[in-house]
Length: 303
Image (tube, rainbow, N blue to C red; front, side, top):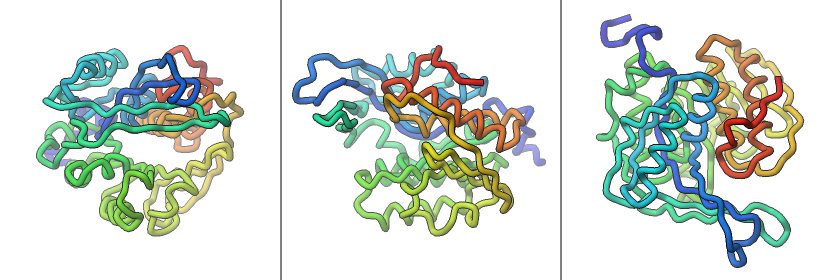
């Protein structure tokens, strides 16, 4: 261990995440008829950081936050969750907004207003070497890669720094076709990051289109999420199936993100991957019972 790569006990954060968090407006009917909305926030990496922080992990968020009327409140809410925002500064610009509504058949519908958001202006120049090196693990996402070429470059820069500084890299491909010009671009972004990944956290079948092979063949530590079928942990070629937990499904938004945060927090505090996956399944099930990306703090997690 060199002087520039401190031992885990000397690192300031357990988990640092890079990405975008947006303002959430949640309605219980189609947008064309909705009169009332619940306001919250959500973004895949930030959702995971909230879950990790609630599990006792020391967390931090790297982003750019627009100085519109929402910005200061977003940062305050994240700080209230125990997330360090020193590298998520207020900058000139607007924050992305998304709406969750129910269509005529009771299905969720998402409407986004995120083009040109402050977070999409992330670039490799925003990545602070010392900040990345202060973490035990960083969480990166295919959604962050998708929001702009600059954010994609920032993601790759963070991964490279993490590898150089002995920081674990966790990656959720989180493939969302609507964010990419085409599937080939998403596949290329995934492929460029995989050489730096220590913990791969895909969901199947959603991410299968952009992965260049079976997850367990790509990295030594992979956990494949299968939704209501549970997950499978792959560690150096050995597979452990972990069953899902029964859930009262109200809203699936953010469940996979909560899973990621709980899993990484548990692994980083020394639980086995199988134990961590069991906890993550319970945390995700608790999230499913609540609307929006972030469940209330008193959401019960079954023992």
